[in-house]
Image 1 (cartoon, rainbow, N blue to C red):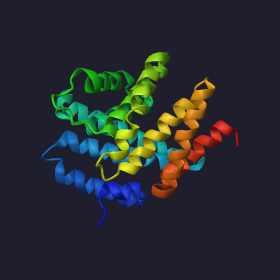
Image 2: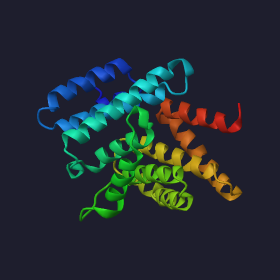
Image 3: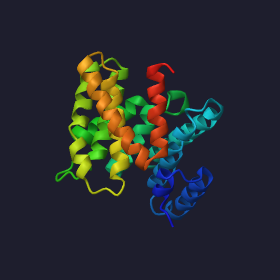
Amino acid sequence: MATLSEMIWQRGSARKIMRETRKWFRTNAIEDLPSAYIALASAHYSLVKRYVNRWWKKPLAVWHVWRAAWNVNIALAVAGGNTSRFGVDQIDVITTILAKAPSWLGGDCVCALSLLNSALYLNVPAGDTMKPHTRALMLITLGDLEWNVGNSELARRHYDEARKLISAIEIEGSPDRELQLIRVLKKVGFFYFDDSYESDRYFGEKLLTRALELAREFSKDQTEEILAEWKKRRGF
């Protein structure tokens, strides 16, 4: 039987994904309630991209964002603010959702910014084993947050740091390496493509072309997402 992660990546039934996630939640909540809520939040957030680019399904996207943020905030409350108990992958989930969800749906950019700076630069454990794709995605989220508050130079610095991790992601041992590589190539590619410098636009387009080639082989969801973003920029 496919794992929950495989079901999500392979575009399994949303109803089945949530049913299996809730079953997992009930099984694991007694042992580690905060982590169980994070897993539930992650499943909700993973389904958002299926609906967000289709106007007639956007209410479903909003609902999943709200449920993702609600579960993250419950996890933080249950943990009593002790975020050191969460692993880096969980911090990635928490900060992505808090950064992307609007405040009226439970997002909290200030909290996300603090957690990301702590995980990436301040409270890094000795012998740090954070996977390259996890670090890159956290840097991208941090870059977006800085960009949104007008710190464009700092945002670019974080994106540059994420870009330098691409070669490491290509050889990391994660079972979903190609899928994570697509995510990083896509996000970094669009950042550079949207830059005002022609050389950066060309570099961004190269990264996006590669991301689309990989997506067509490994992920229908990512293919649709990249093409939708292209259409917005091309005006058709």
